[in-house]
Amino acid sequence: MHQVDASLNAVMVRKSQMSHRYLVQFNPKHTPHLFTDILVIGAGIAGLRAALEIPGQLDVLVVTKDSIQQSNSAYAQGGIAGVLSPEDRFENHIEDTIQAGGGLCHRDVVELVVREAPEQITELIRWGTHFDEEDGHLALTREGGHSHRRIVHALGDATGFEVMRAIIERAKQTPNITLWGDTFTLDLLTCEGRCVGAAVWRVGQGLLLIWAKQTILASGGAGMVYRETTNPPVATGDGMAAAYRAGAELRDMEFMQFHPTVLYVAGSSRFLISEAVRGEGAYLRDRNGVRFMPEIDPRAELAPRDVVAQAIVRRMEETRHPNVYLDLSHLDKALVNRRFPGIAKVCKSFGLDITRDLIPIRPGAHYMVGGVTVDAQGRTTLPGLWAAGEVTSSGLHGANRLASNSLLEGLVFGTACGKGAAASAAALPDTLTALPLSSKFAPETEGALDVADITNSLRSVMVRYMGVTRDQSGLKQVEQDVAFWCRYVLAREFHDRPGWELQNLLTIARLMIHSALVREESRGVHFRSDFPQRDDAAWQRHVVAPALP
Ligand SMILES: Cc1cc2nc3c(=O)[nH]c(=O)nc-3n(C[C@H](O)[C@H](O)[C@H](O)COP(=O)(O)OP(=O)(O)OC[C@H]3O[C@@H](n4cnc5c(N)ncnc54)[C@H](O)[C@@H]3O)c2cc1C
Image (cartoon, rainbow, N blue to C red; front, top):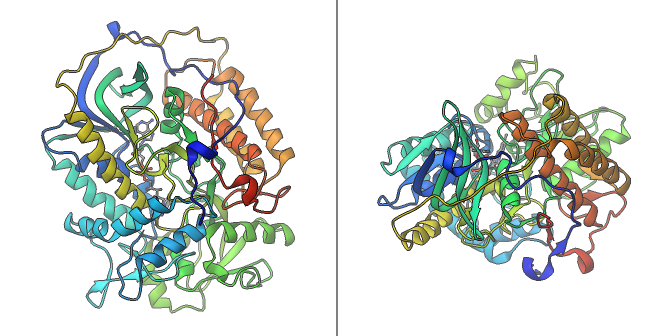
């Protein structure tokens, strides 16, 4: 297995017109300030796990832009992977992760995460998480790309809800942690090449400058850049865009993982049908009732997500049908209802009985594999800034994330960031002062903009040209569209969340498209129909986003 060193193998994508350094103007003399030892941005699994690792003598402020309950973590269904069965071995989980990662995983990071999994799961249990059990033992399921049953789950198919319930409760009971909802992080503050906190907008209070000895970014993914996504509305890539504006390195932005099986019913939200459904034996069938996966991959429906998503799109094209179907009708009805109560309930609301009817599905944007570059301790390239979870590119997932490895990544890297940031903060003098920063720029303000219209247009062209299958002409088209919107959207100053989110989505879309154009091969979740082969000689390397001009 070839190990990739980002610094040696980086390829720079070309520079492009970008936004101002800060989204809004502020003058520290006229802005309220707040001081904390550690600032954590994001209250999903990675952010709260980081906060819980910080010793009691340090003050931790966790900010999140919505309610504490709103995060991708809370919507996770399938579970958390870990070697817990006597028939399984760490080596199996390591090899499965590397196999799925398409030659871009960092073996040292994979080993670290896999070996820490059982202890992290045990800790969640100590903190009050109730995982499902069978005969007095943890119930373990299997998902695509896993060679063994090793995924713990809770409430059948609502693992994230149960895990986050326990973690949020624990964070609320921890005296040195303060949790702020409805606090939108606009930008990271930097001074003399260091991150020194963040500019936030708090509902009811307005603009605030939070100065922190160390900052941990755990703001999650960017699924909302696509019209069809499993992600909740908070996933607009704000943290990635803010880190980018602050000068931290981002990489591998072409790798957006599409979940193969997202409910496709007019009028429904794009609800995820967990991979565990295929893990329990469900089949994929096309509009003619043909089960098509066995002829494509020996693992059939349990092939990794990139293989299954690409096979579904091809089948949809061949049969000229907007979706394919999941079939559970041959499975034990009692097992299906017990394992998937949430999925059964949602499907029932559209008149579908999952034990009998075919479920219409198609792929949807699910997980951002690329992001802010971090080392094995969660350090970014910007001193003073740490990062964990979906916002990062840690080297764990390579070019394609193995199912149920991301909650685990949030736990392991959250812990590492908490430890690292705490040690660094403790080594700094106890006083913090406001620094003479300024974010003056001349915004273009002429004419009203229909932010929702541009956001919807962006999300549509991303599905069309930056979806499961890409080619140069489509990528050039979407590059042009996005560049045009950037010209007049990024030059403005907005005063509300939809405007800031649109600016961040455009920034992220632009980086994704550039990286997809640069990578002239197919690997993992990045499939170029004009370069359908994997090309290790030229492309077993990361694509690093260009520095802000
Ligand atoms: C439907 C679904 C099912 C999934 N199932 C699984 C599964 O079974 N197993 C698995 O391992 N993974 C699963 N995943 C992926 C996994 O849930 C995520 O990758 C993981 O939870 C990310 O955790 P995180 O802490 O990095 O980010 P999140 O959990 O997304 O947390 C991000 C936090 O940052 C906050 N935030 C964002 N922007 C700002 C801002 N500007 N200012 C302040 N706060 C901000 C958000 O509000 C949120 O609190 C699933 C994902 C989805 C969407």
